[in-house]
Length: 146
Image 1 (cartoon, rainbow, N blue to C red):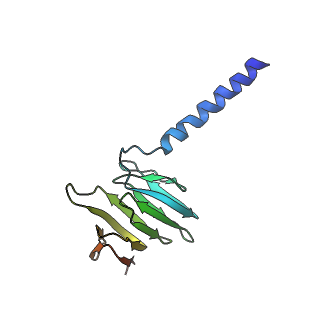
Image 2: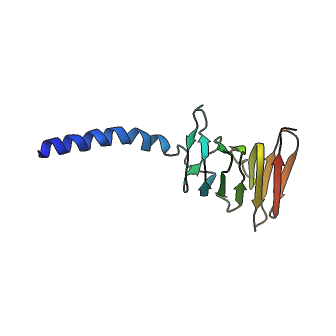
């Protein structure tokens, strides 16, 4: 009876382990952490094509792409303590910070985000239409297909 229980434990562990390993970030210095996620929030890790659902405390790495579905939103805390609120139906990509400059780069492909920081620091936001630079204040960027 004990061997059968142990065999079940090993089987369940073997089935769960690959999913737990896949969900772990692969970078040494994450760019942001999910402070809250409501609804469906997905990430496409750099170098992959698959989207996976993420939740609070997930770490985002350089090159990751984040998207929120309709009726969903997320709040992210960057490693420099700036906060980004990501509205529904938004897709954005994180790029690595530039060397020797306190600058962060986000490519907002579509949707709406609200940026805020209490410290003077540089956050560059690129969209298909314009580029913006955030220097320690609050502002919102919205990108629509038109």
